[in-house]
Image (cartoon, rainbow, N blue to C red; front, side):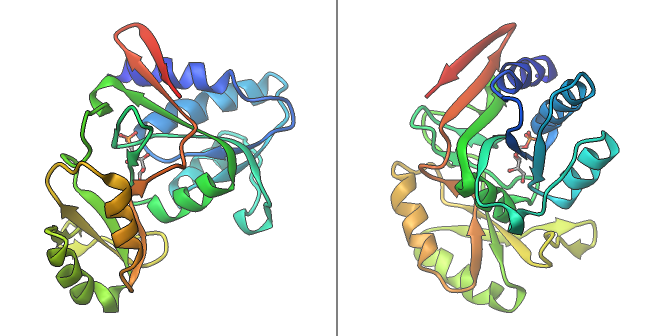
Length: 221
Ligand SMILES: O=C[C@H](O)[C@H](O)[C@H](O)COP(=O)(O)O
């Protein structure tokens, strides 16, 4: 799977142009892209980057990639990020690594949102992977109840013996809705629930998915 991730990442970084503002994703697949971008920078590519998490921020700095604050950026030329699941309509589940809120803001600012993935991430119907939902802590019981009304069984994500905290200090509810046929409708319903900062359904945000499969690379757009 690492070879598939690496091949997808290598194909994606070829799309970066000189002087682009580049969004850097989070996770094990995005790692390969960040490392490849760092190599290009060492060889003369001039870019400025925006990170989708504190983890990616540290990684980028350690690899010599210049970062901009997300609040100072009006647009991003191209973002390369991973996903936990995707379908051929380019709908995604993201947030397995807990970075969904900043990833969503970065994706929304991006002219091109390129998702890189190994072949295990491609599904016909989204929903085997539980949908990560970032909740403000005081709203977590309320949100859990609201999710039940949408037939979602959710659990607060743990980090060892404690509850997992996002970069924003919030909790994550991982919600099992079973396989769902209409991700856009579910996303819209989740958008209506007070207390949810962001959910991991990315609809109409990705412009292309590059998937490694064996030694091949397949593109969906
Ligand atoms: O919060 C994490 C991100 O959405 C990741 O892009 C996603 O979880 C995929 O991660 P990985 O590439 O490690 O499978």
